[in-house]
Length: 90
Image (cartoon, rainbow, N blue to C red; front, top):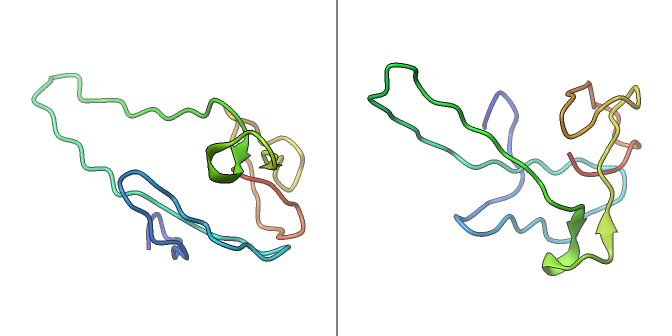
């Protein structure tokens, strides 16, 4: 469980193997990130994506990014996403 959500995928340091995915279901994966610093200003952790999720690292076939329940979720804007029939990656 990470951030209050149970994970359904076992990840490794270099892979997130989603395996076969059924339509209209969620799969949750997570990495544990441990950070320490002696800096007085603390630290910042950022993530990014450079493309849509592709099969075996390719660009096609791909899974489009989800827009969330209200259609407003983006790479930089979080939004509620609890409806399994709103498909995508995010």
